[in-house]
Image 1 (cartoon, rainbow, N blue to C red):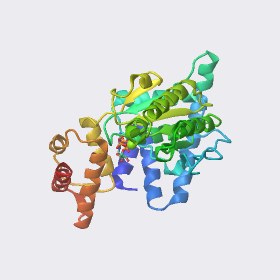
Image 2: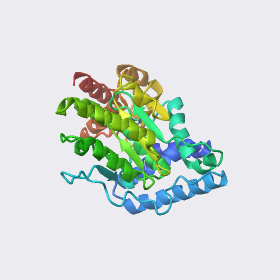
Image 3: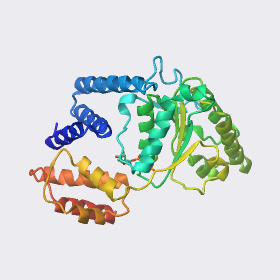
Image 4: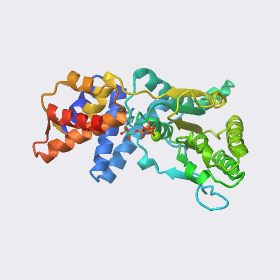
Length: 333
Ligand SMILES: Nc1ncnc2c1ncn2[C@@H]1O[C@H](COP(=O)(O)OP(=O)(O)OP(=O)(O)O)[C@@H](O)[C@H]1O
Ligand SMILES: [Mg+2]
């Protein structure tokens, strides 16, 4: 483990900052996994999961770890004509879940996770947890990551809808594919993820019949209305903002705009991505100004690019120039 990470972990422990401890332990686990220390990473993960379980049961909430017998759909639905899977299951170890968000947005993600954990208690009072979530916002700000994080923190298997397989030029087939996926997904608890769900609308030109797209959108709306995930979640993501069909928006329990990082988040993502390396004298406020308007994905790219430059120079020390060059390159592209 790198010295900087170790120091941050100790600081978090010293100040009993549980949120930071959680984040840092996840980072340590990821780092070990990246190094190929899979066994150690699994053991560390088990330890943290166990302690979370104990904490949540002592606070009266259900565990966030996967419920027993919870598996991805045993049989993945396939399109009738081409027999290709309409969904893909993302294995838990492949889920990315570490995310930096402004506090107000982080709170909204947490609320979904907490309501999910407390779903039985809520049901006892006739209340339903937030089940249908729409994540929207500009590219590279964490919509896909957000869905993975929700799957990770709720312990639900992530089932991703494959729109490429779903959309068929055969009359009526797209709508029936859509129905099939939702039917299967409602049988077992899972997080059904409709990434880039606007692709249904965008593929309008592909349809031979004008009536076909209407049928698909109508089916989608109807399904959203009827869908009662068996103790799972439905998460949809889109780059489009409120220009999407208004009828679609009101069918979700929660609409979250995943924003571009502000100055604080930007600095945090940058420093965190660089935490494996020594960083020399850097004028952070200057660097952050240069990155105004960058997406989180671009920030990660800048940090990784600067790190590579430092490593190739064999100094393993990141300096202002490395960051400035990486930023300039992103701005050109
Ligand atoms: N909030 C965030 N905190 C930390 N890293 C982030 C965040 N958002 C995005 N990233 C980084 O950017 C990468 C891309 O993010 P992601 O795929 O979730 O973006 P997206 O919003 O789904 O973009 P698109 O609209 O293009 O699908 C992530 O793998 C991660 O490295
Ligand atoms: Mg995405």
